[in-house]
Amino acid sequence: MIRYIFALCVLMVAAGNVTAETHAPLLFDSHEVLELTMPVDFDSLCRPSEDPDCDYAATVFEYIDASGKPVSLPISIKRRDGWRALEANCQVPTIFVRFLDEDTAGTLFEGETTLALTSHCGKKLATDSERSRPMPDEFESYVGNEYLGYRLYNLVTDVSLRVRFIKITYANPDDPRRNFTRNAFFAEHFENLAERMGAQLLPATHFDTAALDIEAADQMALFNFMVGNTDWSIEQQENVFLLRFPDGRDVPVIYDLDMSGLVNPYYAKPAPGLPIKKVKHRYYLGYCHADTDWDALFTKFSGLEKDIMTMLVTSPGLGRGDRRESGAYLDSFFETLDSFESRNTRIVERCQPIPE
Image 1 (cartoon, rainbow, N blue to C red):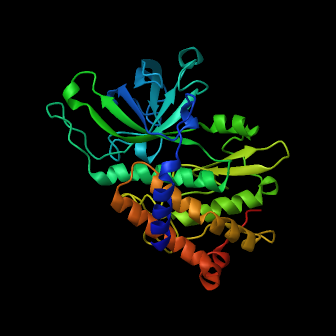
Image 2: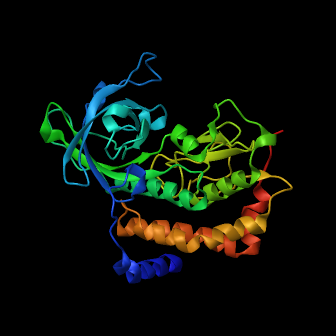
């Protein structure tokens, strides 16, 4: 908690030095909160896992651009597969948004073809006869903390998905009284990251131990330990994808952090088979191998502590209580790194056998 309070004080001193940008940024060039409206009937969206012919549905993004001009951008949307796509789990699912080049030219979304949109999930929308009701604050904090997790990984490595926080109004096409506004964020598409890195996105069935970038794998494993995430696997590509670089290295990239201790949603559980009962209980899942430079790995993360705590203070979508709780959780990670005995017991000695 001391680390979090220190970062807050530093930010308050520096706040007066911020200068405005002189150009209109593209989507991921800015971290300002973007306000959007999207007409949508969630009940009409098909589920790819249930309907092999499931296709995208047409709608629009409505927003005000940097010049103050209203924009209505044609898009198409489709539910993503996974836990949050199921109606029993989330009334507002995670979705894919698809764009056409001719529509995005000259707009904030220029260069984007497909984006993942992560919503607040929510447990229950208003019925047809009711006005929309506010969701519990905890759902909004889930979005804020997952967004924060992606931003923290951006600090660890450039080979990571960019994100943009948004306030989105879901406009009911049949009844404006049921419109509601919630937190959400866009995440960069895997293929866009591959292109940006000059790499190739590998198929989900591909895993080659000999080609795996061990240093990148170690960094990702320690990051997942930091945020309390056990819902991942490089070998099985569970919430991980691989990029093949021109020099032959396969670099893993993490995504979907909602099951982590940092987010700590009501539905989260640790990965099966682990000796922990709550996602806030950390468990290291990195590989054991002779090339691990533990001192260098721990030093890298310790060196990021100030930037991590500052990002926590500035990240949108979190209330004061959320920041305190997340700050204390991240503090406990750095306390582990500060103790030779703790980091040896909880990290070094818990590494997993590397697949043959």
